[in-house]
Image (cartoon, rainbow, N blue to C red; front, side, top):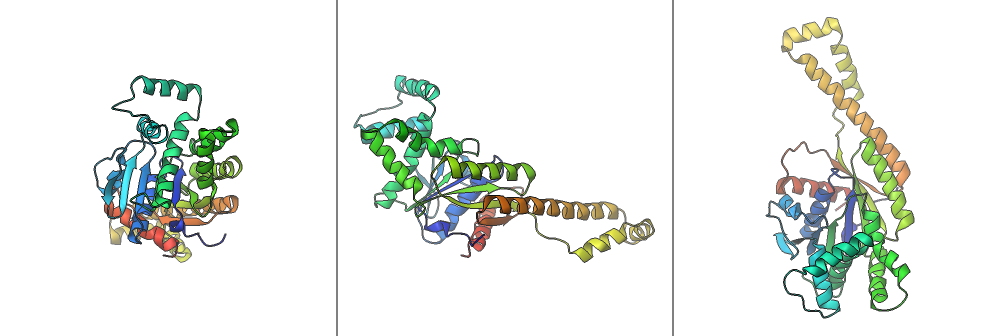
Length: 321
């Protein structure tokens, strides 16, 4: 596969993947990396939990963008607030406070007609992107911590699905420009985050296939998180095997003290995990036909700005920045 594209040239980046692989961290680290290079970034948390900002050691944020890092504004998606904004901007309907009965209608319609909440989410993201392109926003790039792999296809495909149902009118024209932004490889890219393990790799391969066949949104890269470093050489492994021989291990324990067997077990486990991961990576590389970016396992128990900086630097190195 060729070199990774310069993702930071895009206006709209999505990050998705199996739950727990680190897609939020990759989205936040990319926002930090872009800000380092002078971009003004809007970071969107689609899950609506508002805790993406905590990766910057900032309090959770809401629907209105808040600066969480120099050059990075963050917001949390809220479909009711998105609907209020749509009604105010597009239909000139004044909305004060909560929508009340209309919100309940929205919940009913969204349940009866899948795609309503998805279009409110993706519509808001594309609207912010268009505002930035046309110079009406305080940012010039949108980075999205998108839905996990089980929901992202429906979310990205919502404008096209509605476009197929409506031939004329304002809804049709609005979905037209949504699809234009989402389909333009110069503007938009979907990046899939995974880890070098069996289930995440299998899910990534399936997701890449679905994104290629079911939506028109361009694919960017696959980011492999938590890649174990190559700690030991083949000669090291031969030495460890020799040290485990009964005649030698007893003498080793006499010199180094108790615990030598556990240390050698740990070394063997590290080698095994690394080799297993390499097998999964080879399968992934062959199946997805996309640039792979590798982020090392950081052995950090606490998340925060320092860890985010390390991930951003690792991504920058992989992108050749």
